Image (cartoon, rainbow, N blue to C red; front, top):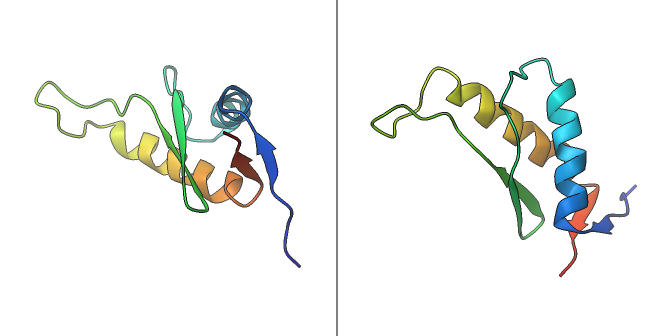
Length: 83
C-alpha cells in the first residue's frame, strides 16, 4: 500500500519537524531545524550542527545529524514541499 504524500509549505513542515525534535529522546536545548529542501523524494533538514571552532563536528554534532536523519526518514514518505 502506497501512502499519499501531503503537499505542505516550508514553514508548516519546519513546525512539524521542530515539534518532533522537541519530543525526540536525543533532543537538547538549541537543537532546531531551520531549513528544509526536497531532493527527489527525500526531505533534507538542516540547522546548527554545533561544529567546533575549527568547523569540525563537536560532541553534539552526531546527535543533531541523527535527529535530522530521523526526520528525513519519518517525514519524507508523508510530505512533499509545495513550490
